[in-house]
Amino acid sequence: MATIRAAIDEASRALRATGTGEDPAADELAAGLAAAQALILELHEARGPLRDLDVATDYVAGENQRVRVIAGATVTVTLPNAVAIGATAATGGSTGAADGASWRAPMDGARIEIVGAD
Image (cartoon, one colour):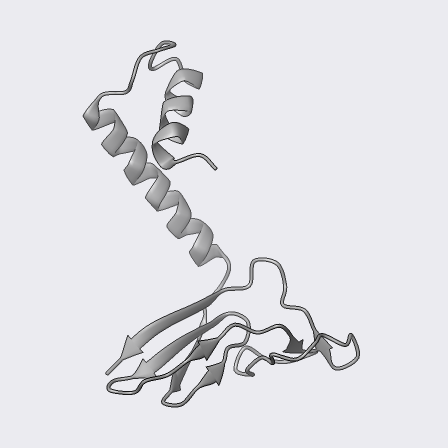
């Protein structure tokens, strides 16, 4: 897996901003990093909003959820093996098997964020 610096180096050479064996200057690396961060943020935001859920007890997350842990709570958030077919983003997942009838595997690219809440 390439690092962001390797990706910036390769892009600089492809654009002929640097030659073979040359390294981009510090300001060029900083500009490349800012562009990469903006791209990642845009890709994340283009996938749509996450559903906010506040939890104070252990929880099996569902797809596309932002699980907010209540301040002072000690919570274990488990990633799902399966999610209910036809479920909304508010529905939690399951650690059971995806049977294809009422439970399916999480979709590729499904997101789960775990954050603290006041």
